[in-house]
Amino acid sequence: MAPLGERAVVLGASMGGLLAARVLAEFYRSVVVVERDELPDGSAQRRGVPQGRHVHGLLAGGAAALNTLFPGMLDELVAAGGHLLDGGDLSQVWLRLGGHDLNRTGAFGKPLVSYLASRPFLEAHVRQRVRSLGNVSILDGHDVVELVAATTDRVSGVRIAERATRGERELAADLVIDAMGRAGRTPAFLGAHGYGRPAEEHITVAVAYASQLLRIPPGTLTEKLILVGAVPERPTGGALFACEQDTWMLTLAGLAGHEPPTDRAGMLRYAAEFAPPPMLAALQAGEPLTEVSRYRYPASVRRRYHTMARFPAGLLVCGDAMCSFNPVYGQGMSVAALEAVTLRDCLSYGSDDLARRFFQASAKAVDAAWQMASGADLALPQVQGRRSVRTRLANRYTQRLLAAAESDIVITEAFFRVMNLIDPPSRLLRPKVMFRAVAAQQRRRPHIAVPTAQEPTHA
Image (cartoon, rainbow, N blue to C red; front, side, top):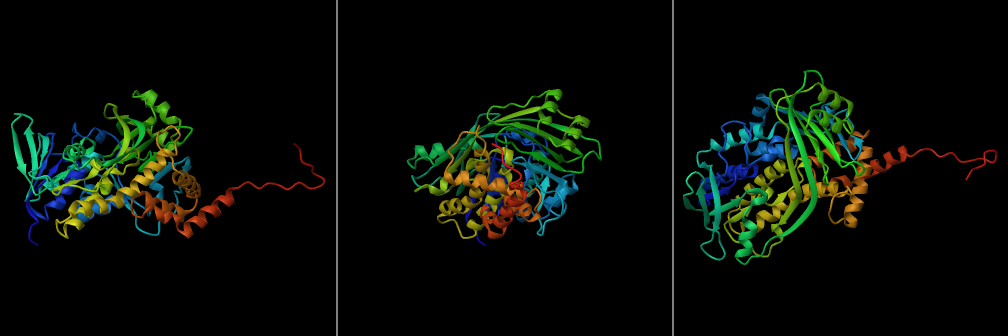
């Protein structure tokens, strides 16, 4: 196939940016990734990804998308020390959501595979694959100064500055993709050039993290992942994930201003309020390998580019620059991977009307993840945000599903598939699932004895 253009430029070497570069390499003669940080050769932490020091997961939907883009890479990840979670062994996972422990016995009927590794470890594998592409170059240590528009209806490039010298230059491009996260430049650019800014939706969650890498004695846990979500009466939770090289990542979280402590004794007391006994025992036996890292996340933000009436040619937005999810739910990397596959599908039909086609198509993946995350956030009274009738009804139904998923493997599998971005949330409304949820609720109702004439009632 003939190239769609000479050069594409990606702003940001985030996961979203790297995956976008991988796709663009199929359609443009050259691809340049511009990154503010000096990128490490290996899996070291970097300043531009502060959340990299905290728990990350690669959901099954994101893993499938990554396998499409980089065949064999996730096998290499596991061979190098990462972990595979297979729906054939539910004992590996302990999820306590909405106050309910999801079923941990049996096996799913369909394959459901996800992966555990630290964010730097996974990102290093992706970066290595991108760097191996012959027509992709990475300009790290460079700031993005501004987008450049040669005409009123098209972006023609970007002005960048080398951080070491402050020397500026312009990169001409047939396509620019903003993958700079919440700090992306596109909304301001659109406003300044008469397009208006995209409509935004905010949910103020005020999440605070405290995380630490641990060494836990072998055999202490049978689980590879333990996650406890917040509930209305307790807006705190935490997770313990197996990572590469026999390490474990502990993340404690608090919402709506609840701050986890950073001293060991305080962290153990904090975890004791919600952690299952195996998790607490592992924490007590664990050896800290790093200092405690903090991270604060003020609000989830969705920018609805797909609803804009006008948008310049030669520009796209992806990843957190389009939608920044509450990190508690581990959706960001997986949604970015699904967006990259969507971009590939859109580019296969050419570059005409690309922005409209891409934003509308990618909105489907974003919608599913946003619906789940925002619904879970708004189930907590401490979180600020509008609660529509639909949201309240959905949260009530979700509680029924979670209660049923304590023992019903069919509902557990259906919920896992939606949570892992394999199936859309509408699958949970299928008659088979709804019937089993209602039946489970009826079985749990306590039997109320009917008084006889010899057994009078009492007020």
